[in-house]
Length: 617
Image (cartoon, rainbow, N blue to C red; front, side):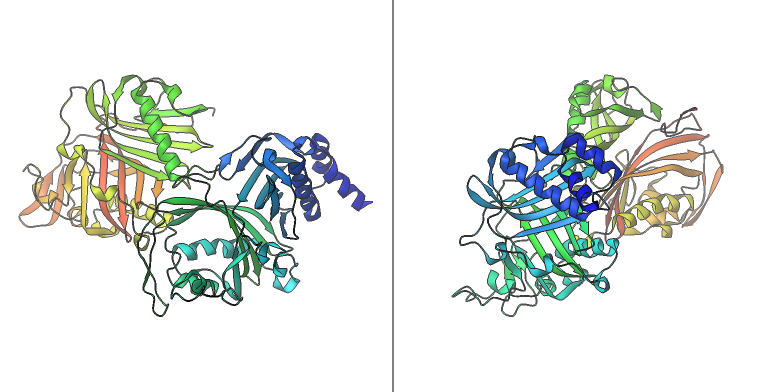
């Protein structure tokens, strides 16, 4: 009776399926059956029998595709071999598939992901590899045994360990370090059905004659191969999406995007006798990829990979689900253009978008939306954080015909702008800006080499330590580089080694190093720095963007100065005031190298961020 109910649950269509399965979560067998039902519907070009949600989303080779288009039109048959791998995940109600299919009468390797909610399919991925080798590779005739055999109880590890081991594969590639991932000694990788690591077959005639040939690298073990730097042409692997975790089979399926910047060329090669470099002439391109990992005893034994290579995917493009750094930067550009045109319809605003301008809640269409008249200029810094869905801008725009410094922060969800911050240094009389606001220091725009990058969380800690160093009058609290330079509204306020700035009573302090200056006590008039909001962390560029409010209570009236020959005190003539500020930090090798800050003076005290909930909310 139980088997009958299960089968009925899978075969019932649409709303009936969703209703029946709401009482019983589909198990592994149900999910595999649903995948077979889906593949059969593709062949018949008829989605009517499937339990599709009304708002189901399909992405095919990174392109959002309506149901009924794409493979739904071009499919002409199911698998012609026994090559079928299922990754079924009852916990997350998702199922993945990798196998052969037929399109326009030709074989393709197909990767599919189905995501269910309440028994209905809400998300679908199609990944298609169309360049099948002829004759058909042995690896596409049938799956390797390890990919279709259940694990014994003693071989199983937790879901988290399975995912961690699988994701480590991408880190190992990025770092050219095979020790980063837990490869079993027997690990073998297949790509398009061909063994591309730990290939045990004899070399084809003439294939291995050239030292450093693809055939030679393909005979190396999984970790050993990565240690050579052979994969260093892969700049970054992002948009890693865990499609399904099959605990019974020990399988993890992950979709991702491989980014290639065309650098370095040539690739330095190590640990390969007679080979020191390899040409990298492919230029800039992206590859969408799907991988299935067999995890046994916490180690990677089999890797089954496929890609949509040759689909002309733009460099740094989105996988169709994610908003990448490029996507976020493009949305910021859209926003800035719409702002300059005083036309909110030109920006992808969510219906419930909220805007705060200079700490005040502001309706979209008011504030800078009315007064902006142009921009941005060449002084433009973008900090994009695809993990957080945050993108920030700091630069020069035009307001009422005058050059104006501004910082803007956007929160993006599902490619729509949900939150907006404007920090505007109004320039009502048109005073010329500091000449430094005519150009951006080059390091703030440059990508960091991988060896100089540090993790996201550590970058946030370092940015926050800058504020602590100010409040504590202790430059040792933050990791400043010796060459650190701070600019405020364009003016150099620390690290002015050339003394290009105008001479004044702050010149002695201005030429000091960033940390050295803070330890003198010259900033002790700053009472506190509150409402520190670190929004965007761009690991690729080494940038952190943050908002804060500098509080000043007017005390002490005389600041004690230490460590400055001939200077023991400095007058504090300021009455209480506050300064909402935005900062961008360039962090390289764990140290702060550049600080770009803007802020405006407010006689009003007790300012809030503008994002605090109102009474009754």
